[in-house]
Image (cartoon, rainbow, N blue to C red; front, side):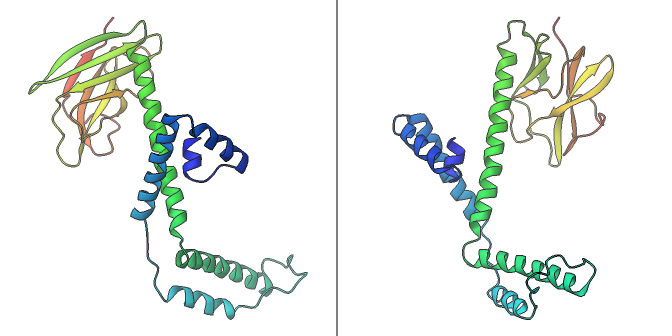
Length: 242
């Protein structure tokens, strides 16, 4: 509930109960404070100042549009009244946005950007948990190989969990506009298993998809965003441990 509390999204009863919990729980209190600070920073980063003339333009335009008389909400969509209603709706919506921007619409941006950050954090935590589960699996087996220039790569496979993790150490960053792409080796056919972070030289990556009988894995350098099939010679090829 830390994220919802930081965004003021909890109903009153849940908020009160959670705040009582915060009084005695230092980890939750710290996480809530950090998320609230992050939401504020994201909101400031996305702040957009509207044109000073925008609000006046919208309000003047609204004053020239006639409202639909009472009892005519069901007019035909193709008639003149229907067109007026649609025009009024569009300009009323524009007025709402103009007013929101003039009176502090950055709150909307704060909420959206903070939710994006929360989703990314949840995804990162989930990925870390899945990597840990593979590394700690009772049947996990490891194979390590030198990748050149002092770099090493290890692949950890859990057949029981049908997942594999690639652990790289000291890998050179790819050239600009390029990325390392991971592949499953399905008896000579390479199946994409995700991308590595081009900004990190040491990382553990959960291969995307199940091992599904693959005999090994490879790493190639591909254009940013990845490729459907390998377009370069492999930087590394590792057979899966038996």
